[in-house]
Length: 453
Image 1 (tube, rainbow, N blue to C red):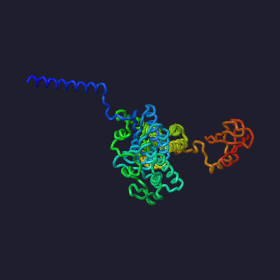
Image 2: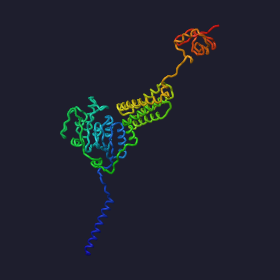
Image 3: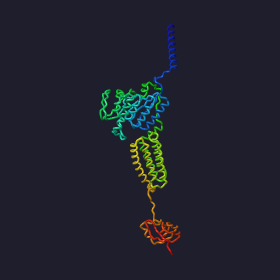
Image 4: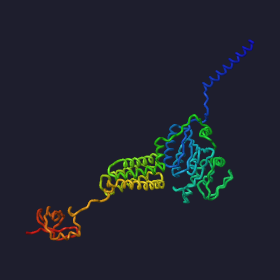
């Protein structure tokens, strides 16, 4: 019995010693879960919006921050329907100039110009249920571009990006050109004329247009052999979020409506008040959003300021609408130049102008008793009592005698039957106070001579 008790004590002491030893090892050499062989932090940039100047500015900031923090890997989370080809080119240039490895992780769709961005990455990972391709060029209305030179340029650009990363350039060309035929034996497909190539994640993996399938960004990080403990995810700033909201087509149309209606109503209704303040505020938000998004430059702000100043001067300086017209042209020019797409802003501007005109008519009817049209219409009338004589009545003045109330040398003023008339002599000088007789009329001229005796 004593032997058994002693054995139990030795086993317990041995177990305690082992536990203490393991604990000490864990304390001295702590485990690092999800660590990788590669060093450096991972910088994740979301590409989840249409490709335009705002996205380019956003990514430029992201690449600068990644370089500043000496990131070891950049992951682009791509889910975009595409966008402007020139901006996709700027983003691709940004990627090529980076000395950090880049993985394009397609989390939704990498369509159109989005596929070009993905092809410029060092590696492509795709989540289940995603796609890449369908990169045929279209215009602002969504119609396919058929210009042979443009199609050839874009097809070559796509092929070059694919070839640079060791992918089949024929497939990239088939994504961009609807007219060519492409064989894809890996997936048992042949793209014929009239078709465009888009690949699912499984098809992309088989054709070499995806390097792996991953369900999450963490899986991509692990696949690239980096630690998931040192990941920085880029987030848009408040200004960038606000700019994204303000440049939404619906919000943009609303701002233009409020701006146009508010400013014009303020010009029509005497007194600077709520309409003018709301109108100017709406225009400021419109230009601010497009400026932060990278669509507008300082010249659009200048056009905006000139336009507002001209419209403000219209309130105080009688110009029969000239200043208002100049101000309106300046504002509209600034609005169009500030937008990222002329076709989009034309539609928004058209809707806003039509809606604003309805609002202006309603206000004009409501405030008609305040005489809002008075500054644009000449209401003053000139009467005979005020000295105005129509041309057809001037002949009746011949022979009448009045008094020169200013020296006539030869032009001056005479008083005739209580009216002041601008007259001219036959060439001589007549002193003030002299009696003069109207001898003839010549158009608007009344000719007089000194009355003798």
